[in-house]
Amino acid sequence: MNKAEQFINEKLLNRAEKGSLRKLSLKVFPIDFCSNDYLGFSRSPQLKSAVNEALLNIPQYRNGSSGSRLLSGNHAFTEETEAIIADFHHAKSGLIFNSGYDANVGLISSLAQRGDTIISDELIHASLIDGARLTHANRYSFKHNNLDDLEARLKVAKGNIYVVIESVYSMDGDLAALIEINNLCERYEANLIVDEAHALGIFGNHGHGLVQDAGLENKVFARIVTFGKALGCHGAIVLGSASLRNYLINFARTFIYSTAAPIHTIATIRSAYQMLTETDYRPLIGEKIALYSKLIDNSDIQGIFPGPGTIQTVMYNSNQKAKFAAEALQSKGIDVRAILSPTVAEGKERLRICLHLFNTDDEIKMLTDQLISLKAHE
Image (cartoon, one colour):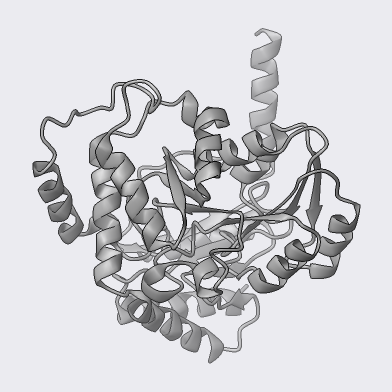
């Protein structure tokens, strides 16, 4: 065995000993409380039909895009879709990337230069962290949603300053203090970047997101909106000024050197946005969130934290306990997954529960009954 293979095996063994070895699974459970398909769009016959109809109106579209957007992969339909999405979000411009990961890495890594400063909430997504790591900028994190800690970092920041947060945090499901953070950014002339991945479709009028709900669409420097959660499709868009769009076309490596998304993907994104425009799903998904919260609140069980959105958290604080709880639920046909360290900090292991529009009231009651029972016998 050579040194590289030995290194690989030792790292895998270490993960296995800690109970945090990741594995792919083909298991499918009847009741979905796991996926990010909050509005059920990925399984929607209405969306599939709308996509097929849209494609009929695009003559001679190809199965693949055949190249990057800067070479052979651009299409008028894609640029029209970007304009439609920007208008929906009251943004001046937008640029589509192949995934939320690509958008976050491309945006952050291309913006911040040597001598600049990136200040990020300690709980931001890995893609935002990786984008920052690719820069030569000064990098700081601040305690989660802690305005005093953020201000302390802003006071020592140099160059162009970028503050990076999520509007809805993907593991805890809590919300950023958007207005207060924006006020600090204005005071210190910092540029606020907000990842709205888990806000789209869930918060704001017709699911516009939390930035618009707070009236900050003309103040935030950039928003990243991803399509793989509530929209049930794939890709992401960076929203901002026309200058930012042009800058990313020229300097974002994840955009420049990636084969463009095929027209079928773009048609799916546009059709999903049309569904958001036609129907305000927030009151509907709100009923599911309210029911879950009511059932949990009435239990008075510790460690279950009802959130304001579709992401709900049940803390177990160890890999073994979280995995045991997930397996117990799965044995009842309920698909809930354990989130283990190092994805979350050691001692913060939990069940991450996602509520969906397609979950019935009986399913939500079954879930909460099982959670309460598991916690009572912990």
